[in-house]
Length: 124
Image 1 (cartoon, rainbow, N blue to C red):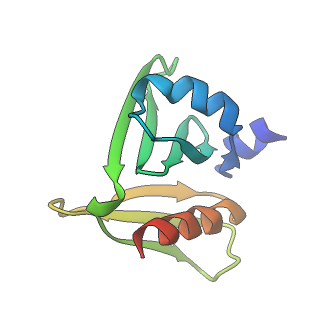
Image 2 (image 1 turned 45 degrees about the vertical axis):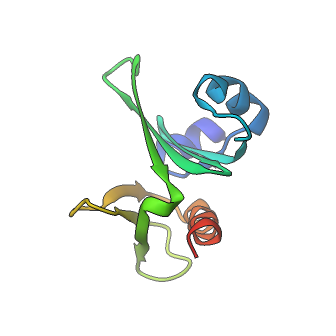
């Protein structure tokens, strides 16, 4: 079901153990993964210090972009949908010094609310 959810744009939670091993080379002392979500091939990785946005590029996904966003650099974020429980939603994150937001599209609803809550916890 996780593969189907990913193809439909539903962000599915990723095992913390698997992500912790994969991201260990990128972590600094005292940093740990709190939660991670996969959205098709991309990922949101929340650590205790930053948000890491993973963008797999190309047909094979062999090229990977890791964008680190310190929580202190996020000036605002929004969720746009037809309602709180709407199945389609857009998440936008504005970074200090950047005019345009980072935009991620969710095709189905539940996980965007959890991503929004985690962002709220770290930003507010």
